[in-house]
Image 1 (tube, rainbow, N blue to C red):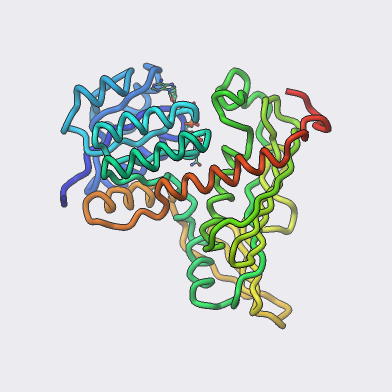
Image 2: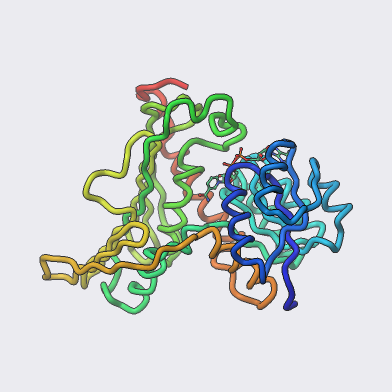
Length: 337
Ligand SMILES: NC(=O)c1ccc[n+]([C@@H]2O[C@H](COP(=O)([O-])OP(=O)(O)OC[C@H]3O[C@@H](n4cnc5c(N)ncnc54)[C@H](O)[C@@H]3O)[C@@H](O)[C@H]2O)c1
């Protein structure tokens, strides 16, 4: 297939705006032909942003049935508890899928998704947009070319203080709809970045959690340790209650020949034995647009999906095992839900 991908967005809320922005930047590759949301005002907003007058639906099953071959693929931007059902329905209809994180909220669903995608023979791309971050891509390239030798330790973090009232009445504040707390949401990003850079299977997962200031049922802060089968020790630190620790970076990798660390488009390289790192300024990127363009290329040109359903399952495994390992953390949480 070498034509424009006809895409339907399911869930026209906050993040779908960034996905729609990606469609607009790649109008030569992809067009949004349908939108589905239960909120008329969100349908209005997304339709206005896209300016392409997509067909509007309130029920994705109805949309899949009525649109039929007019849709090649769906882009799922729903609250977490709805991801699995939307994936099953889209896969059964033979549509390619780009799905926001997390893939789903438990491993039983994840196993069924891996099987359903295989059975349907469709392309499933986990929307792990930070794999398109210049620092992540350059660190991966430098690791693969041996710049820091054999990797020993990786820290991957994402921390910021969420403003007051951000969760009142929202699906994100409940375990039932969110599937956890901060770790399965913002913390999902540093988790897949770590798995991507470690480049080996998971050997052991440990975790601890806290809730310091957000009025949510889950944790607002998590610390996770992952040991990999190649010996790499990984650490994830992620929070909605503390900002990025002063002087640290979102990614820091140490190998036997040196270190690489950076955030966003800023990157530093410190060979072992040197005192001052050299700085690399990388290009700025719109990771959502790059992700959308790549998804279209996977469908039209056979490009490789960076993370498919198997990787989506691995990320979820780390998050759920860390939460299980952290059990009891609520007893010492300074803030109750
Ligand atoms: N990659 C990132 O950086 C990033 C950032 C924010 C959110 N996200 C992810 O995107 C997803 C959506 O988050 P959001 O912040 O946009 O949430 P949101 O609440 O702003 O949007 C969700 C939308 O789904 C709609 N919806 C709810 N139930 C529905 C149903 N049954 N049928 C159709 N539509 C329904 C809501 O009306 C809403 O418009 C989540 O998975 C979240 O983790 C990713």
